[in-house]
Length: 226
Image (cartoon, rainbow, N blue to C red; front, top):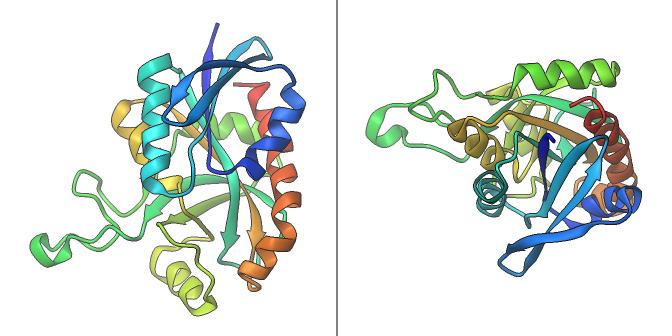
C-alpha cells in the first residue's frame, strides 16, 4: 500500500481534513504531538500537525520520512497573496519555493535566497505530482511561494518579495518542507489557499477558516489520484 505523509502547520488548517477522513489512529508521537494515520483511497496516510515555522515543519517532514518511509509528502495550508491575481480563499499549487531569509552573500557572494547546492533561488517541487494535481483539479494555477519565519503583514514588504523573487504567495513553512523532501529524495506536492491579501492580519482572522476548507477540498481530490 502506498504511504503518503501530510504535513500541516496549524489545527485550523488540519481540522477540516480530519472531519472528512473520519476514524484515525495514533501511529506515533513527535514531541507532544500525535502522528495520526488513516486509510484513504487505498493509501495509508500519515498526518502530522507540525506547528508554525520552517524549523518545526522541516523536523515534522523528516520524521514522516524517517519513521514511516512515506513515498510522497503533501503539504497544504493557508498563505498570503502577493498578487491581486490571487484573491481570498483561492487555492493554488506551488511549483517552486524561495526561502527569502537565507543569505550568505557576505562570505561567498551567493545571492540572497539561494542555497549553494541549487542553481538559482528557486527550490523546485516534484513535477510529476504537480501534473497529477492539475489533472485532478484543472483550475489550479501554479505559483512561486516565498517562505520565511514571519507573517508578512506589510504591503510594501509583500511587493518587494514579489518583485525580487517573482513570488505570488507567501507563508511560513514551505521552504522547510521543500528542502527536507529535496535532500531526502522524496516527492512533494504543495497546495495552498489564500487567507490574507492586502488586509493582512485582519484578512487572516476573517478568511482563514474558509481558506482552510478550500484547500481541504483540493487536497482530497489530490489524494485520490496520488
